[in-house]
Amino acid sequence: MPPLGPIRFLTIHCAATPEGRDVAAETISSWDTAKFGQVSYHYVIELDGSVHATLPDTLKGAHVGGRNTGNLGVCYVGGVDKAGRPKDTRTPAQTMALRALVAAYRARFPDLVVRGHRDWPGVAKACPSFDVAAWLAHAPEERA
Image (cartoon, rainbow, N blue to C red; front, side, top):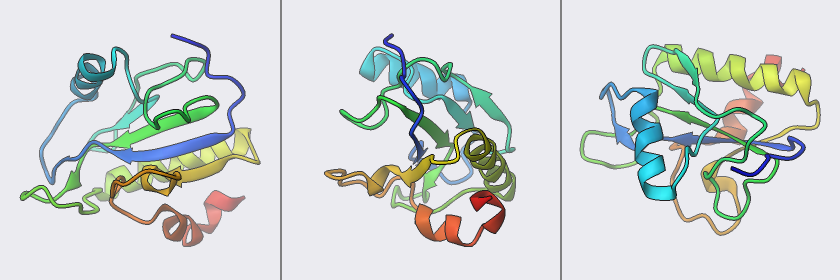
């Protein structure tokens, strides 16, 4: 896999798995390897809030087509309701874990741009099924 390059972005994704379905990080990585030939995300956050490093942050992932250089990918398990429609299904533990992960990277990289997958130009997906900018605006500790 090619090197990531200087970290400038962190993109939040959902796995598009049904609400409440417990899917392991290694399962998501195996799906991505089958589809893209490599692990897509640097981190996967499971339902219980456990954060799994699935790709070193020195290597490029495969999570935002054509825009993966310098871009960390973080995926939470869930993101759709039981009928498959987009829904913010993050558990409180996942939300806390995501908040901590974003804060840690912002502390290391003060100019880091954090986006949802859907916020990238040309992306026609609901992923991550919530408004990242609004979420960040209501989390003052993440802006520090």
